[in-house]
Image (cartoon, rainbow, N blue to C red; front, side):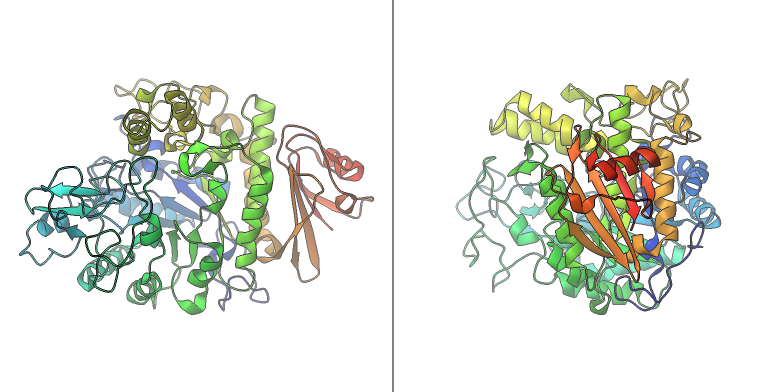
Length: 602
């Protein structure tokens, strides 16, 4: 199954420290946001049958794994990341039978399917939560319930157990009149946090995960999994609770304290992840388990992904996608190549001896990299910068992730009005920061949303130049759930599929190189001084082979140091986003053109 379109890594080279090498060591993952990928029934929302109809496209691209954002039953408060039934498919996306068909058709094409899983929290409509609202129910301690602060009327401002703020705006506590207590929600009020301190919670989660694995899926990408262990004092109290031995920290500009130091990478995280490995994955083969890891440092990534510790295969780190933010996510600062260079190098260095790296710039929570750090002002700049960031990412050591449309050079939505946004985080953040806390101007907030808002990645996949970009039928009675990017007329799969110079074709080459050249998947990483702030350069080494990667991440020419130049034809240009002859001349002369990216074998 997993050797479709690629060779496996020989065991004479080391990947993450496991023996034999895991199958995913030279694999490429493609993330699908189901509601935006392909609508098969004309209701304006993508679905499972739509995904199945596009599997040949993914097989042609050459990817190995399809990661699906959540398709479980959900009220869709946070687009499916609020799950009300883990063992059913939301009717918006189809049925369990549709899921079985997708699995069978993907496997027939040699594609594995990984499901997104959210177990830090559930929906408040989940049966577990509804049962927990009764203090006498066996589920009463399955969530983080706390009484109002003494001397305050429950449900009134200031009565919350502590002053933590939610990542989606407002307090992280919601009062429930039926139970007469507050429950913790780090995200939406409809996403109550599960209490992983309770072994019955963990047992139920593992049972559900085994049910899906037995059904035939190939693993999980686990949403905010590093938030499941909370930091408690010696009496089981959270920071900031009455009589707690732990301070909750200083008040922030939005009027709340920050929960992340106490909920990210908590004291029992390693224990919980190791237990999950034993209870769900031990004895199975051919799977992949990946964790989204807010609060995890590169050094901790090495521990969690080191096979000898028996936790997770990979983690998504976030330090590199926070380099254009200062303090609040919405306080954006100019992109500096040096910050990206340092962050990527630190991630690589941390897993030099053990563990593994996940490689990504884009996903459902991140904007389009070509608009964020590249240049989408015109076709030439867009294509060159999309290819440059593609090469930069895919030539690192680890497992690369492609987000739907990234392989086409899709851009941000460029929305200009708040009503165009659908994302709960964006709408709540505007209300919280602009209207309530008044800590950001409307103009600044709208600019931040346009640059880094999550809906930038969630506009419909651009298949062709028709009215709705081929996402749904041009004569469909219902418009897509979110606006189609008008530039789909120029940027779409149909336009790029057979174009040898397209971004799509460039990504096919990147994927094929990883499959066929072990040095790209597992070779050692050595950063190089390019002699220019706008250029990232590094070498990869494996046995007696060395390749060098040089990327100019700017819209102006960039002179490079003498040590990076090539002086004869012995060095082979493996890939460039300009022509081979142009790449050789640039490296011979020591001047890269705008967005020029080159990989050579030395």
